[in-house]
Structure formats: C-alpha cells, structure tokens
Image 1: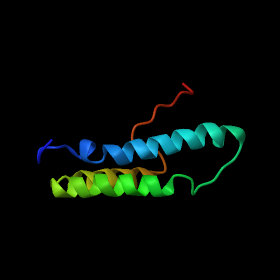
Image 2: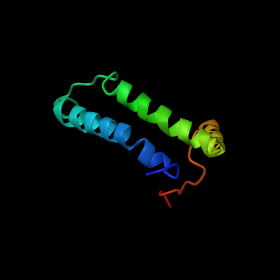
Image 3: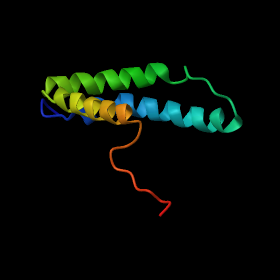
Image 4: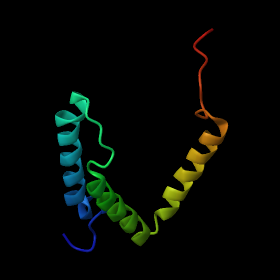
Length: 88
C-alpha cells in the first residue's frame, strides 16, 4: 500500500501481536486464577503508541481529547451520563 494506508493497517502487526498475547494470557493464566498485570504490557503500549501517533499524523488527536473529556465528566458524576432506574 502507499501513503494512503489507514492507522489500522499501519498498526495491524502490533494489534495482532497484542491480541495474540492477550488471548494467550487469558486462556493460559487468567482462567487458571493467575493474575499478572504486567503481562502483555509491552505489546499494548507499542500498539497504543502506534495508533496515537497515526491519529496525530492525520490530525485526529482531537477525537482522543473529546473522548477523554467525556470520560472525565462521567467520572465526576460517578455514573454514566444515561442511566435507567430498573426499580420502577
């Protein structure tokens, strides 16, 4: 592909590496009661950095900022913005 590649295709090798690591950790460790927060950390950070860099290269980083602002507002409220009361 040329310069028109999407962020997903640029980072696909890293996404696959993270997904493989996560699936291996989940089936071989988590389901057996082993919890290691450091597992797949390198793969996740490499994939995340690639996606963020490519979003910035395409001037899409404002989408990340908008998402962070929305999440911050939800955290301040202590609940999602849209809730239904199931007790009625």
